[in-house]
Amino acid sequence: MKRLGLMIGLMVCGLVSGQYFEPLPMDPDPVSVTSGTSGNTSDTPRASVDQTPRAEVYNPTALVPANQTRVAVLGYHNFSNSKPVTEMLMRTTEFREQMETIRKLQLRVISMQEFLAWRQGRLRLPARCVLITMDDGWKSVYTDAFPILQEYGYPFTLFLYTKYLSGRGDSMTPAMIREMQKYGASIGSHSTSHYYPSRWKHAEAQGEDFFKAFMDVEMGDSQKKLSELFGAINTYCYPGGFVTQAMVENLPSYGYTAAFTVIPGKVGADEDMLRIHRYMVFGTDSSIFRRAVNFDRRNDAEPTQAKRNSSSLPPFPVYPAPGSRGNEDLEQISAQLGTIEKLDIRSIQMRVSGFGRVPAQVDPTTQAVKWNLPMRVYMPALTVQLSWKTTDGKQTTTQWSFDIAPATQSTQP
Ligand SMILES: [Zn+2]
Image (tube, rainbow, N blue to C red):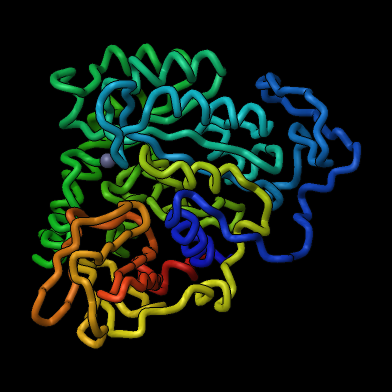
């Protein structure tokens, strides 16, 4: 599995106004060739599949052996048609377009129960499936997304944290959630307090006993509380995507059988069920959704080194270094342009994948450029593009990429 490659590809795609690199030539997708055998003896009821003839031979309803199914797990947060769009807030109209795209592509939207049953070998599914998840418990899930999901008949999962269930502010009430449960919503835990990764790290640094007590509250108590409110809870979603080995080892003791990350990638039959890949669909970057619903294996491939280097690498020191890994605590991106002669420092522009143009600061003496990240990066990799002019009018653009996630992320089974 070239998951790391997928991440890199995702980030590269996200850089320049959604342009994709051309896919690599690879073997045809083996699961897309299902010549005419319907095999559709499903005992699951959802059959609202568009029968529009398509050029491909993919049969969207044929049930396949478990190891031929791949699932794109989508993660959403908040919706509005008027508030400013952010990574965590999407236009409601765009959400509707995405649901329509799923229908047109004839992807099967499965419930969490179906997802778990497939992984336990109790249910066969089509080769290409989508699992829709929504984090935190924003009221707009009820007001904006729910009517659309109902209209399309798509099941979905809500990952809730128990301190955000008051109905105050932008949060949902338990009554709203129960109403959605009647229409296909599954409930999972998103902890008790939704602490940021720094708080988790700090707690873990206090020692084993302290961290166990911390997990008892954040993972254990939320499971109990949500079970009381909404029925048995057995799925978990890591706040901020932060996960450590100790968390993975303790999750089953709180009753969880599956846990979701923010690392993008298709989920197959060999997925580690306590580190499940998930595409966080940002309101600011539609390329993530396009990649998530693209099941062509060629687009899962890692861009070759030549592709990654196809635009010129910076001719000066940069941080993090091109191609480096394990930048998960990244706080600053910087470049030392001191060797560039006749530099017009006012012309310097830095763009970062997922962020767009960023307010980088330039030291006029050393010609060093730096940008402090405003938040922890959930993306597994970043691409930085730096452009500048010299006083003779010549413009130059350079770019480099590096991985955020530790190298071990790519070798998870
Ligand atoms: Zn969250």
